[in-house]
Image (tube, rainbow, N blue to C red; front, top):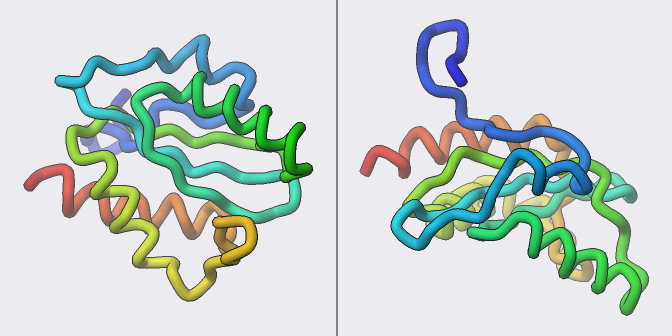
Length: 127
């Protein structure tokens, strides 16, 4: 995918968690993994880093059933990156002031998180 300026876009998928596995496959260890920005039905935003987005969704559904957590309303998944865990931590640092400790989520609009993610990915992915 190319952006208007000819650069590779940061995001691979933006949509329903139920459809993500149709377009985003698990990565091999040598490919790294994905950074995910997740919008919950209660309006909070979560960050995740995984090589298996479909497994993450399945595990989250189990948490919802077991602990009554909010469902995933929307997932935004990055291109694979070797330093996906470091990228997630970098994004979390930029929005740390808005963290909801009880739900391990952030009280920040998804658009703000994706913008922070794009900045962090641009910095860390090239190193």
